[in-house]
Length: 173
Ligand SMILES: Nc1ncnc2c1ncn2[C@@H]1O[C@H](COP(=O)(O)OP(=O)(O)OP(=O)(O)O)[C@@H](O)[C@H]1O
Ligand SMILES: Nc1nc2c(c(=O)[nH]1)N=C(CO)CN2
Image (tube, rainbow, N blue to C red; front, side):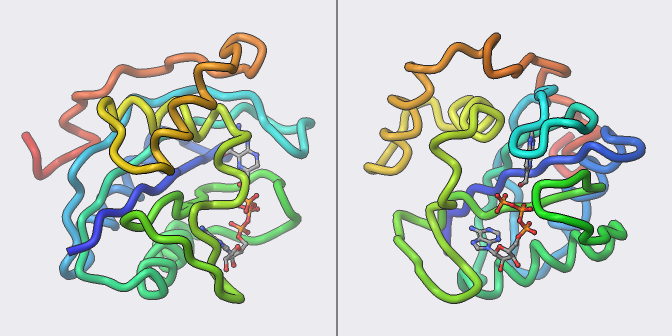
């Protein structure tokens, strides 16, 4: 089995429902178990800043899928939620990025892991660190150390809904 951390973001439509649906769809995939879901954070848009605030979470899954298959799963969840690609860093119904896959470094044409921008993004690091309180491995330790240097108010990251919401994790009631 493989340990994977995924970042999920949404800033169009019913943002909370979009996150719920994305988790439900992940849970339906064969050989995949959702191990943990962070609290939900409301975050100011990064990159292209003239757009609505996002809701962001981090999810820990355990899966028999390869990294390449996992990317396809993430893309299928995006498609099932009706994501339309407009422009880079633009508004989106849902976005699933693979942050970490085991402790591997992956560089293919379609997949870079660790996600190349994860260490500069407070909207990724805050939820990731919440679900990895005792970081194992160089990548998570770097994530923790990097976050410690950040000012979350300046980064525009605020807690929106505390975790332990059984509706977000229907099978873990
Ligand atoms: N770790 C990764 N997770 C998800 N997609 C990745 C990853 N590494 C490379 N990609 C590639 O990135 C492509 C573009 O992804 P996407 O449109 O979601 O980018 P983005 O979310 O707008 O920007 P960013 O990559 O900065 O988060 C995907 O088609 C995928 O092949
Ligand atoms: N706050 C926030 N900003 C973003 C996000 C996101 O999920 N949250 N995703 C982006 C493209 O991956 C670009 N900018």
